[in-house]
Image 1 (cartoon, rainbow, N blue to C red):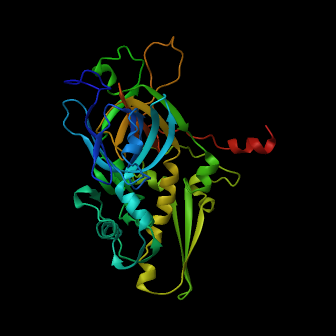
Image 2 (cartoon, rainbow, N blue to C red):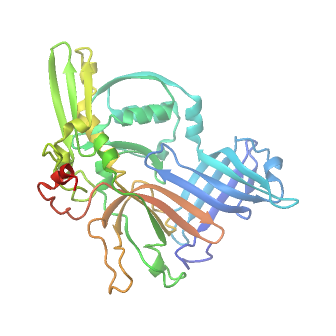
Image 3 (cartoon, rainbow, N blue to C red):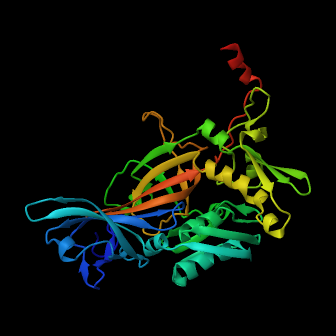
Length: 430
């Protein structure tokens, strides 16, 4: 922790870290916590985390911990005055063990209180000619009782849906309707909570953001110089690179939807491909991450719609049926959701209280070359914009760092052109 001013890029200031039990009693945890982790994830409805406690006064028993407690958190960077503040609900304890003859350690797990409420509620509700945005808003406000100030951004959506939610839990219902969201050239919507609050955002809106910061991996020269360390990566791991079989079978490159109207006896084919996504500017970076290599039928990956083929049956000729607009969101969502796993990296950076899930980051990806080569070079294709899919704010007694998962669905430089006829090599067994 820091005293006054930013003395180190890993400094932080705890303004409040209080445990509140169901009787209204509070206890300050600042002197007995070992590690605090707070998670944000674009695939998760709420924020969550855990705190490791070194307890020498048996607070666990004396405070009657049973899962009906709250954790009040307010943490900032010294001098910044833009804290991460939240009241979390304790829901689980793990790893409770004696540490000395009179002490113990344990981990308290916590989440946003709305998740506990969601697990106890049931939504069986019909919506008539309603936008996805308005359905999400209704569930948040009227089912979960969310404070409107905790709703950060519910992006507008097109289409008026007739939907019946068949007994889902509130957050299950929100994620179910979110998958159907679209708005003209926007699709692939996400519902998640970050530092700002609850969000309903399209992938296209997120990737159009100005990058929050630029980061790079470099050897540290000074652990106490924030100018050198605040935007440089301490460590990184490549979680996944290309996986062609998974990408092809899940619609990353091309797909087809067959819509059949039983009453009019008509059908419609709707195709979507990575070529369309690239030309429409719907990728994080400018260029698709594969070239135009051809298969045994002399077709590219982008002209193979049967690799991901779905059918949709119109069971009645009503406004309700047609209003689900499946042709506008099903294929694009499948492509972009899968492609976000095409290239994933985990980076560890000095603590940044304002970095959050849903941000865009500029990352200079290094080339793995001999140290004897002069000058540090970067991989031009893999350097560029990345989406912060998740982030773990990790606070220890002496340091603060962020562990973020960054994802990219495209490259900043075009892949070299594939050589025609090269696919015939496999037929010759050479």
